[in-house]
Length: 498
Ligand code: NAD
Picture 1 (spheres, rainbow, N blue to C red):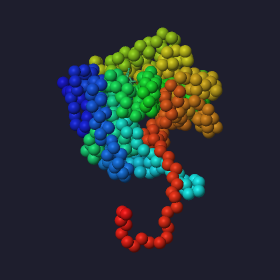
Picture 2: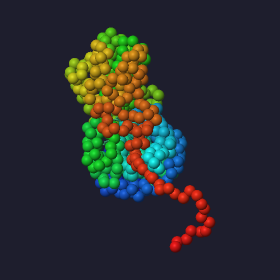
Picture 3: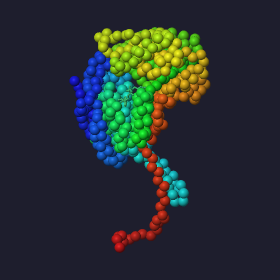
Picture 4: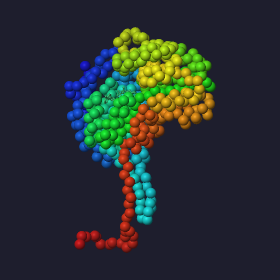
């Protein structure tokens, strides 16, 4: 059995007695065991990070950026290897796994601009003979806790800006797919990062609590489910750390009567079922406006959903999406599907009993399309995080807008319409952080920022873009006045102490 340890002080380190099983979700088999760090393991990593960080912070930003430049090259060199390792533990298709790496890589590219992003502000003659300037300085030792669903992208969204700013970073990845984060740390070292600046400590709640309580760690980034995001935010604040914590989602797509229905149906199929719905930006609620729109949409959607191909990533292009991550996730999804049926939602397509031939023990869930879902049903209120799309029929635009605005989550949303005024009004008024106009998954590019509203985000600064450079630095502002100096006359003899 493969044993997966930690990456500490620039080397693979075996863990102690506590481990967790890492599954191959396509076969249901345990393929490795990952170490679960103790408080002592975490403490050792922090001490090493604290030792390595000052020299890294003193390395000029251009040189730090060059390490990231080299890292981008190595990511491209190893793209297939990384995607394969990612699919094997996560279950997503190979092209989707390569996309996971690519969306992380793009943030690394943005961080190569660190010398520019770190420039401070300067006011000449703020008062008589007074100049004022501000600097952005690194925090010191920083940490991040990441979810299973983007094991390459989200770690890079955190460690690339943290390290570009001159911090040391400790990553606690998801224990369900720990291999890719370790590979990334190894590549960063190959790219020239000094030992101890980036470390990976695998673990569960024990490691997380040790991070939250450690006095040397200055900041915590978190991405995962909302209850844990809220917990991390509270505990981090209680221990005097800055925190940005991103939680769950229930993303609505509004379909106006004038939308191109084929385009909307294609968009919904990709955004609803891609990666088996295990994306925080997946569309999980379709809101057609008017019964006629709903009937036309369902007529277009049903055959597309029925035609979706589900299977292991090893089947290559023949597969649209793979299994969900664990047996427990599958059970939870099936339970919610049943609750939807019990509550009176209409399962227009029901793939819940689907089996993949030759992979009967895999954690596969076939696609499910619900119509006539209402807001009090559990399948509407809760994040299902599976290949399940719920249709809620709204009778007016205002009702559709209110659904997206009133839901406790506010990560992403989209409107499909040909009416620019409706789109503009929606983008302005809806209480959600990321909006798509005829774009189903509006994940902003690396140079803008990513973050939801309401229960999808705790904190203020978003991920990547300019916010990341603010989150991983603190501002120091200097007000300077110099007494008038010698401006004329030369000194011709060597100065001596008298
Ligand atoms: P999760 O909350 O179960 O786990 C996330 C991390 O928290 C993992 O590293 C895990 O080890 C740790 N953790 C789990 N339970 C803990 C506990 N009791 N105490 C301390 N730490 C704990 O989330 P997940 O299942 O890995 O990921 C899926 C969730 O992440 C979904 O809700 C999804 O919407 C969300 N997500 C959000 C975003 C976003 O940007 N908003 C992005 C991706 C995923």
